[in-house]
Length: 140
Image (cartoon, rainbow, N blue to C red; front, side, top):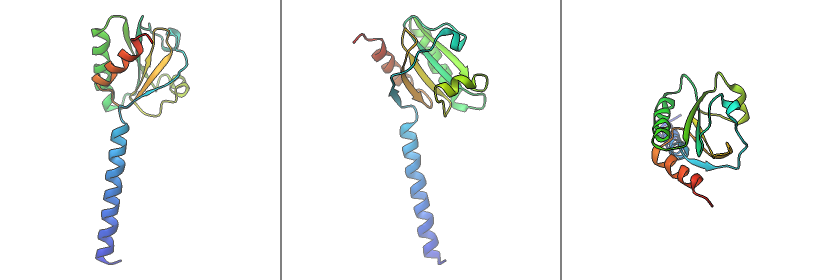
């Protein structure tokens, strides 16, 4: 293979990797509205919020999980009737499977009845979570 052909192949691989990185980054932390199933306090062994619950799925080896835990905890403490529940996927693989958790952190936003209304894959940003909470908490 000539040096020119090698340079073309390497340039193409770099361009492809860069494009895939941008696509991945644009999807990370994005909110998806979902028509979900119900979660009870018995499912997560914790009290659910009176108005909403931020259900975070995380793992021990997940670096962004700690930051997401802080973001969601701060939002829950700053709002009345909102609880933050953190579930370790290693100890609750049944829940991870039930909700098709493929990455950590993943956050499910539950309404006052424990129904999953939105899903955030990846690190949650405070402004995004706050906007989605406002949407869920605002009566239709």
